[in-house]
Image (cartoon, rainbow, N blue to C red):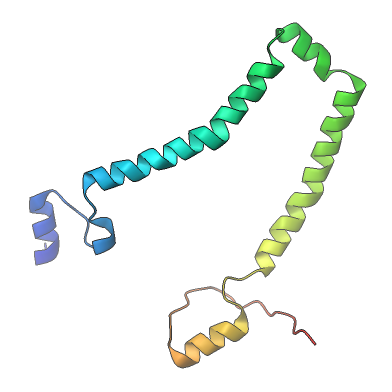
Length: 126
């Protein structure tokens, strides 16, 4: 092993970059904040929606789902998703983090490196 990796292996630490050498309490705090955010903004609303929907029992829930208005709203939601997802994927493919002109400038000035794949031409305005 090279000297750097051997020292890291002896110390039980494999982080070779300064950005990953944070103390354990910092890492656990960040993980805790991420899990708390996930629980607060995703799980809690989801649990409250299902708790409210199932408050009167499964029979009432299933009876409400098979009503014509509920079926129509489910169909409308699925239709909107079927239309929006392909458009979102198409627009995401055309949105490059660094368009061609900027990539050429960055390459010419060597201000920063760009490891993007192909360059997607963009429309000029005016």
